[in-house]
Length: 203
Ligand code: AIR
Image 1 (cartoon, rainbow, N blue to C red):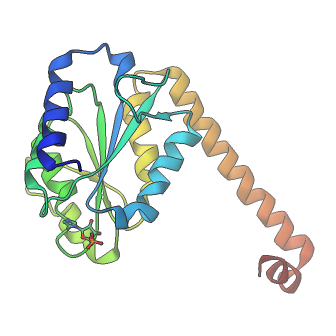
Image 2: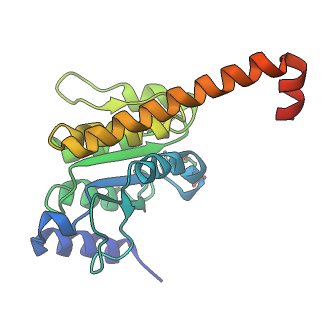
C-alpha cells in the first residue's frame, strides 16, 4: 500500500533530481478526491486536445508537452499538499491546475500560496466551492475558472505556456477555430432541420 510518506518522498526526490525540463511534466493536475475526477477529467481532455501527453512514470516521460495527475487532499493529507506544492517548481512544473469540491475547497487556494510564484488555475468542482477557491487575500493570487469548467482550466494552463511557444499558441488558435466551426455546424443543423427535428435527433 502506498503511504503519504511514500508520495512525499517521491516528490522530494524528484525535486532533487534536476531532470532536464523536456523530461518533466509541464502542468500538474491535482484534485481533492478521486470523486472530483468526472469534473477534472475535462482538464485532461483539454490538454490532450492540445497535444499534451500524460506522464504516468517519471522515469519514462513522453516527448513534447506533458502533464501529470494526482489526488491531494488539503484536509485529509495536508503534508502531501505541502510537499506537492513546495516541490512543484523544482520538479519542473510551470503551472498547476488544482480542483476541489465542497464548501471548504481549500486545495486550490493553499496550493496557490505554497507554490507561489508558480501560477495556479483553481477549479471549483461544485457551485458551492466557488467562494473558497477564489476568495484570496491581496498579495496571494489565484487564477480560477467557473464551477466545473475544468476544460477551461486546461486551456488557461496552456495559455501560460504559450506565451513562450508559438507552436502551442497556434494550436490554441486552431482549437478555438474548431470550436467556432462546431457552433456554425450546429447552427445550420438547427436551422435546416427545424426545432422539432433537431430536438428529436438529440434525444
Ligand atoms: N475535499 C477533499 N479533501 C478536502 C476537500 N475539501 C473535497 C474533494 C471533494 C469533496 O471534498 O475535493 O470534492 C468530497 O470528497 P470525497 O472524497 O468525500 O468524495
